[in-house]
Amino acid sequence: MDVEAKRIMALSISKLYSLRTQRGGLRLHRSLLLSMTMRAARDIYHTAQLLRDAEEEQVVPCAPDAATEEPMEITKDSPQTLTPKEVAMKPQEPIDAVEDDKENRCASERHSRKRHCKTAIEPDFLPLKKAKMDTDEEKQHLPGEVLRTNNGNSYRQAESLTAFPANRAIVAY
Amino acid sequence: MAGAGGGGNDVQWCFSQVKGAIDDDVAEADIISTVEFNHSGELLATGDKGGRVVIFQQETENKSQSQFRSEYNVYSTFQSHEPEFDYLKSLEIEEKINKIRWLPQKNAAQFLLSTNDKTIKLWKISERDKRPEGYNLKEEDGRYRDAATITTLRVPVFRPMDLMVEASPRRVFANAHTYHINSISVNSDNETYLSADDLRINLWHLEITDRSFNIVDIKPANMEELTEVITAAEFHPHQCNTFVYSSSKGTIRLCDMRASALCDKHSKLFEEPEDPSNRSFFSEIISSISDVKFSHNGRYMMTRDYLSVKIWDLNMENRPVETYQVHEYLRSKLCSLYENDCIFDKFECCWNGNDSVVMTGSYNNFFRMLDRSQRRDVTLEASRESCKPRQVLKPRRVCAGGKRKKDEISVDSLDFNKKILHTAWHPQENIIAVATTNNLYIFQEKVN
Image 1 (tube, rainbow over the protein chains, first blue to last red):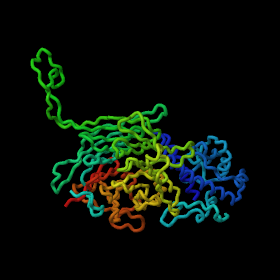
Image 2: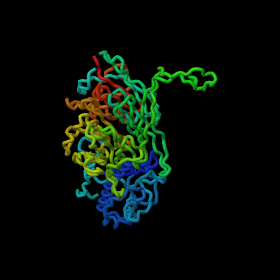
Image 3: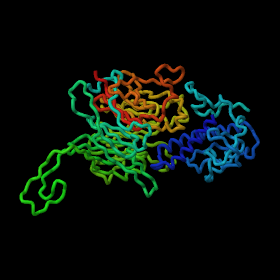
Image 4: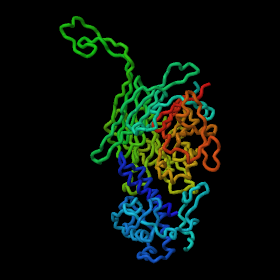
């Protein structure tokens, strides 16, 4: 589910960017809808990420911060307040197959501290000039039954999203 | 000619006319952005992305014949809005006509309001079929006569000429909207009208252009707290003090201008609780109302959101009295529709003359007729393949999944670039105007 969430988040951000260059000026209605969707996806994604990190106990330089971190605050949607600085880059697959790797995850966590200063940093969800390589993505996935639900009329997996079940038991990897 | 008394499914719809270029290469300026019949139905106006207005007039000959097939022919074409540049904000203002609304006819001339994102204009459309001839000082071609040759005095007389239809801008209502205008609505008092943008609604007097009254303002003090915008607004058809506006959150507010000068507090709030089982990333987007229309009798209003049409009784706020699914098979496709931006499409809806049937558009050039009295619905298509004169439209069916029957079209084969956003229904007769991307189709009830 967080895969979908990240994809939707990335999609929303790129759409928000393209809105700025559209003829006729910034469309308030469209920006509002895009930013709401982006925030919903972001919240799901980050919460899933936090839960996953808490469970997996992987040793990464900023891991201690991850466990005690507070949930992301919902701030004004602007690209400057989002997301992490790019860390050392590796080749990356196209935007809709973007997955986590250890360094990005770490960078995400680190960014939450950076966010308080609202540094202008480039989001990692946009089509990057530098490429990153997917690593270990399979290991990061939560088992599908935890977050992925559909009410039976969706043939697309993970299309519909119910309220995030933060209190569900997560199978330890 | 039968009135609009027949239900949508007793009526068989036939092709009548199609206006616009045939070729598939659509110029962006030709994309139709609004369609509106006038109050008698004799005139049909369209606005396009290029800022032009084209008015069609119904032929009035042969009305008494039973085989009466009224045709609409071009009556007037004019450039209503031009692209502008706001130097202060470094913004280009699109010339696209967002809405056209006709004024009720008071004299020989016709009047309509047309608006783009920022400016509303009142246009007068008048006919000229006579011209004065026989001036003393000038020849017919305009050259001045030699004074020495003038020996008698004559009185100029009016002589018939070929009909000329002139459109002239009588009022320009500008600089009142910071955000993009989405609606205009003429009041039943025939003196005032409202214009609505994303956050504000202004009340104008048709005669006064340098001033308007702000009657609704939902702009928060801190724009970061913005959670909803105004998506459409309309005056009640009979009560000149009442209007409604819809929001991006799926709510409709009814306001009474007698209550206070600023109508931020609604008199009624129409909202249906969300079905939690349908919650998704895109719930917010698909619940945004794209159009709101009062019924002709003023007792109901209809709203259109992405997947459904809802009919509300003005006396019941907690839920609609009727809900119709327009294209429920799209619910599982919302993610793809988000990717290709189709989920943001703003479909309009309209009532027939006696409020028994409502119509709205969909994709693949399909449009839906929803019969309220018979609780039936039909899907029809506006296509060049069904363009033979008086050809009856065949109902279309979309296969949502599983085995596709013969004559059904599967969801994946739908062309999402072919969308019908704008439709209009003649106020008295069963004649409908359906706008595809750059063509206007006119369909009529089959007359035996």
